[in-house]
Image 1 (cartoon, rainbow, N blue to C red):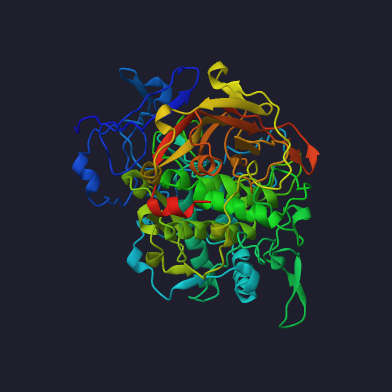
Image 2: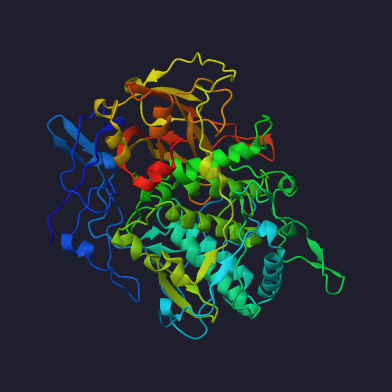
Length: 635
């Protein structure tokens, strides 16, 4: 057995019911290549093994693991006056692996979806029977990269490539006509998202949940990969590629693609009106015109008169650059077998997943207080909307762009060995691994370039902007030492958070290596309702703020996907402070003012009960950052 090892983060200020003092300077006692900021326990892997190639498995491991993990607060390491909060995962951690298509049944262990909706009071418009059909021929096999043959497919933006959209329409027409026992049918393809996102699969006694963690990007990449290949095979076109909804491009991409809007279309070949396979009846009817999509959507349309394009650009810059400074901030937190997927105390959601990804889902879902946000507004039903796949093609493109800016995937073996089973275009169940999808060259597809003006449009300080009318805040900020945690966000909260002395007035070399961040930990909420709240730092005008302002450091948002009620879901967010402190001359200040803005929840533009959240603790930390990303996020 390898000796126990642990890694302490650098200086940290932590506040919760269990911590009431400020940490001093801390030093890394044992440094690993990966920076997970977790207490690592290994019983069968030596330190040298972490440098070896990732092992492969033809079937998921059958090791039975403990079903609980220690919360951060349950383990303290005392070093004199120095302490750190750490987390211990299951002692026998193994990667997430979906159930297999094993003999004799040739179908996985699967159950009806159980999470993300409240079917005791709201009628379900889609089925919660989300399990895949049994394999007609073979048990699952390991999918090999070298069997991906044919030409490289190029995904192009929807708004200026109508021929790609027409091919998608033709292929989807055929897919919709396949029988229900065919795993390639549109209904069965739609159910994949429900099964993996709403509690149909189990591992070691826990639901598998691919959202809110580092599984988000690789799972959806594989999902679209097979969906695209099936469509291409149905129309016998090896060049077929999904178009992507270029909602980050202000020049034509930030509107609902018009070819998806109408129930019928005119076939140019015969002049007849025919059903449009791209149409979905469960969409927000108010968002099908020429109006710009809102990447900061809060459940109601904007009426504040702010420039929507500028909001888009600043939002994208913040989520792709400023708040995406390492693998955890971009991909999400570590998630392995034995973790409770929606109640992990150390859970972190990635910047894009909680941001533009969630905003588009909620923006497109049909608002109805008697329903569950179908289709795009709930993960159990999202796959039934053809827009879902072109939306996620652009989300996948964000991963590609982030890597081009210097980002790197998690180097943890448990990320690389996480696996899922999909049906391929030959109707064979195949198991795929995260590590095999990191390089698009292996998958033989790419993206046609599209302008990314948001890379040059970072948020700017509102409080220090010349010739801008400011209404000075008169609110009193509560010293966080006097706050009782968990903190309930029933209304706007105004807190003063001290910065560790070691963080004040760091020199240029220190700031180049490490980013100062604000961590909001243990966000508990009801997983059957949508949620969003904004976080402001050192604001001067809380009544009039937008994502264009540096003081608006970011938001937390989620749509229904998990069991809820009585704050049954847990997550966390990390926001960059470095740029704001430098831009506003606050690097020498010994504290920051943090404001939580809780918007009024709406459904179909009618006020409803808000999905209230609670927060376990707040931390200010230093996080190592890739140099290229650090440079790119400067204002």
